[in-house]
Image (cartoon, rainbow, N blue to C red; front, side, top):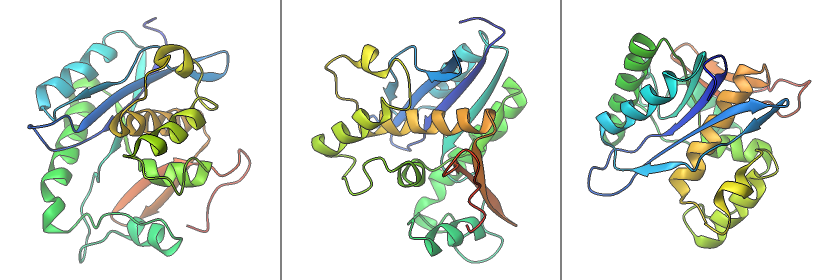
Length: 219
């Protein structure tokens, strides 16, 4: 990878050290399109493994934008941030980031963001793969953990991301890997001015624009 190119990284952040719960993927831009060069990584949620992956990519790129699928802030009041309430208002369910049962996940996301900004000089954004799928009309009604659902999502993603069919061949990716690719794609969208912000006083979630010339201000 040329050290003059921007790399767009997706982290589907899990919390388990007992099973593979974290997906890691990256995209570059080639001929005006997002390109995936390597298969995603599927790993336990080990901080060192995740940071080593990000460091390795950063050493070989000019700049980097990292999309993390995890809340990167906490609510000012109650259990839900304003951006989460806005998502729910428009039919996109999401976890309440202020709930105790997701606190470990939120902690990991916030710490990873702080580390990547300080150590890698990266731009870090919060993303939500399900919201991206809904906006892009990718497997909206599919169960992403099922074999059938993963195939629908993977096949649809190949229409957005060059190289995906070639690197996967006959392999069906895990849901964490697919979410990592989606997270990287949203980072790509943000880097190219085709993402929208669902924001509020206590947090921002980035999603692809519905159309290149239309921001989703109604959120």
